[in-house]
Amino acid sequence: MKILVVDDEKLLVKGIKYNLEQEGYQVVTAFDGEEAVNQARDSSISLILLDVMLPKMDGLTVCRTIRSFSDVPIIMLTARSEDIDKILGLEYGADDYITKPFNIREVTSRIKAILRRTNPAPRDDKDVFVSGDITLDYNFRRVTIKDRVIELTGKEFDLVDLFVKNPGRVYTRENLLDIAWGVDYPGDVRTVDVHIRRLREKIEENPAEPLYIKTKWGVGYYYKKD
Image 1 (spheres, one colour):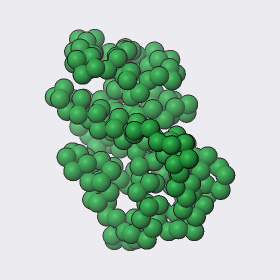
Image 2 (tube, rainbow, N blue to C red):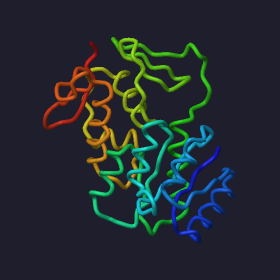
Image 3 (cartoon, rainbow, N blue to C red):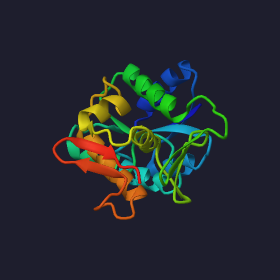
């Protein structure tokens, strides 16, 4: 698989590239935001490691721009520890974030986890699941609602998959964080809220009054089959 590493610290990029290549990945690099967007148009890119602080175009803008034409998994790299940077990254379409300084083993572990979720073993092209108006195509990891194809990120697809297969079951934010992100994920439950809000904006006709992903006030979220 090919990974795009984007950071203006060339020594850091060199180190990440070396370690990822030792893991068997093909690695391409970019050192500014504009170059990152151009590289991301390569459909063979499997995942992007994207720094927040970049010349020419900051990482958050890069992330939002990439999301306009691709659902490739994005992990944000940030030297800041403020929650707002993490939340903005998720709001703009990132799948995960890692705060600098980091252990390269953490980076490779996160990459492997995301790629396992977004590149499952091949299935038969008839392998679909239907729940009311929602159809999930696992071969293409695609969601269709009332004949309308919805473009989702890998994490958003995972959440829809979990909800529609368990209609009526209420998941706390802690449940969703453990199931969808893993029990070792260092983020907090606000990550879940951001993804649910973003998911509703895509699948609901009126996100303020959702028909599918409902809120159980004081508890969590659940799926209501139409």
